[in-house]
Image (cartoon, rainbow, N blue to C red):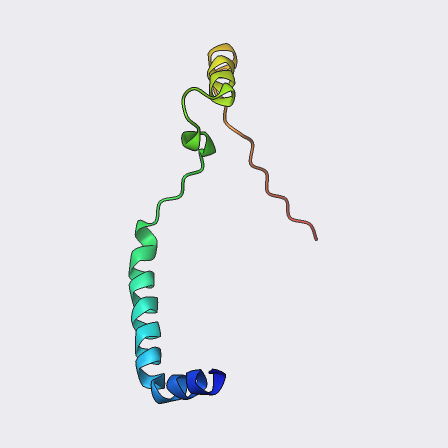
Length: 74
């Protein structure tokens, strides 16, 4: 089985390479449209205790943003 798979890969190497190049090129053009969701609370349902507690914290203290800290250690 492994030898047949290896032979198939060797026989189809040009097609496999072309597919890899096409997927890579498509990915390069689509990378700018990727959206990153930094607010993980959006995945919580509205009836969870965490979501309710965050709503109370927002009412009491204003923003409930998290702190992101980046340190450069030499």
